[in-house]
Each structure stands twice: as C-alpha cells, then as structure tokens.
Image (cartoon, rainbow, N blue to C red; front, side, top):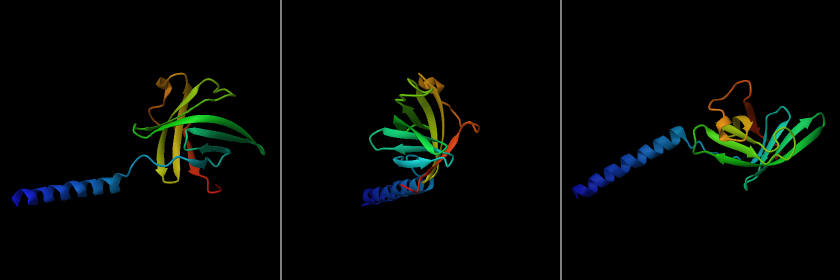
Length: 138
C-alpha cells in the first residue's frame, strides 16, 4: 500500500509539473500553413507539403515566387529556410532564417541569403526583421 501511495504522489507531481510547464511556456511550434502578410505588400502562402509562394506587390501588380520551405521548431531560435527561387537575386540561394512567434497570429522573421547555413542570423536585426500577420482574407 505504501508503494502504491508513493506512486500516486509522484504521478500527481509529475502530472502537475507538466501541466504548469505546458500552460506557462506553451509549445514554440505553431501552425505555419496559411496566408501571412507584413501589411506592406508582401505575402507568404505556406502549404502543408513544404511548398510556398512569396508574393511581392509592386503598384497594383504582384510578383509571385513559388518556393519551398523548411520549418524547424526544435531549434532555438526557430528556423525557417526558404529555397528554390527561380528568379531574382535569390536564384540558386537559400534564405536562411530565424522565426519567433509573437502571438498565435503573428511572427517575426529575419533571414540572410547564402549557399550555407553559416549565414543564418543568430539574433533578430531590427533593421531587417519583418513582422507577418495571419491574413484574415483567406
């Protein structure tokens, strides 16, 4: 009986620790699929299969760049790499980025283009970081 009581006590402690930690800190991994805008003429459309579109507005026209993405929320900071550019200055390069969720409906992103992950920013540069918001017109 004493062993069973000790088992119940430890189960309760471990369960409450997990509950408190989960509620307090939450998971850094959030759903990225869907349409996002920086409210300044740029949009990302992330599909669940690793494909995406980067839309950039010029006047009343959009340039659309079909790309691929890799989202890794097991790293700190979170990583978002964009690759497969077929046109423009990023052709043949990867945009190695970091991402931070600022809410369930917004994140900030900073990235550097290159041929190797060595160029990935370690911290957010306030002059280059873009903030994206879930587009409610989806």
